[in-house]
Image 1 (cartoon, rainbow, N blue to C red):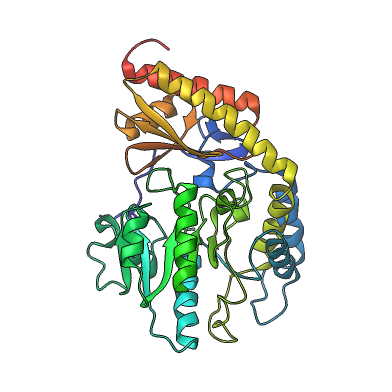
Image 2 (image 1 turned 180 degrees about the vertical axis):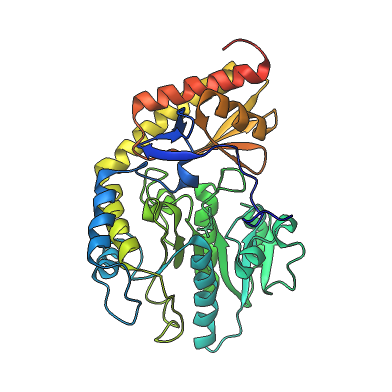
Length: 392
Ligand SMILES: *Cc1c(COP(=O)(O)O)cnc(C)c1O
């Protein structure tokens, strides 16, 4: 008999009942150090007092009115995102997948309004853009698309970070290039700054729209508000989600005025997108995360975390191969199956997230403390020792 919850997930046998900061309490009383943060979502940890009051204050006042009316928190959050980014305009969604849907629609509509037949979108192997029909077509992997055809047409898939391949494939039919500055699900694979700059140049030469998927790497995770800032370039369109709501469902598409020019009244919408609850929390997240000091602190702690992980890898050369990533978006490339490391972590009271390419992801809350980083590495060390069958 089928499970009452559609059996599309394979879950760990863990049930968390409460959380505080980077810690989660299991129903059986064990405490876990959370290095997954709900897959890069809980950027300020669990039960952050400022987010709890932002949500509960709004909940006491008004939950939902629809986009038939003005939503002050939505307006304020859009203003804050515009102030802190390349963007001139923002559309709010409830998830990264919905952000992908709009990014694709926006890019195609742009060219339609220009009277040009440009619908092709270049995307990359190993990418992840969500589970909708556009999202799986954009990612293109057999794992995600098999059996779900016919797929949304118009996507070309190229090797990640292969600028030559992109240059050869780009044409007057190309509407957009869609890329994650750091692939998350694909195994914490950063696009080198030069490659991102190269894509920007190529887009400029051919008038192609550069669409960045910062759903996982954005919102302070790399030590800048958005990961592309490190390369000194700006996109035309950007997808954001995960961290933006600090744990409350929220996503967004940010765009320049030019790139958004096809999206006029009635061309897109969402019942829940930009609702008062999500935007009140999102506004508080932005207030905290977009602060220079907060971001500098992320970079400082990330440097320390990375250094300790390098030492961990060196101490367990049979278990780990390398550390990769940027900021607090880190990956441990494993020699043993990554799922075994994640599993061994559970026994040590630490939560990590597996990714493709046999990588264990480390995506902690951005306000994780130095002591907690120390505790995290000690737990990972014990997990690795457990893998090697020697005493921790
Ligand atoms: C998680 C993710 C998505 C999809 O977001 P959902 O909120 O799960 O729909 C899209 N792109 C990237 C890069 C992601 O990490």
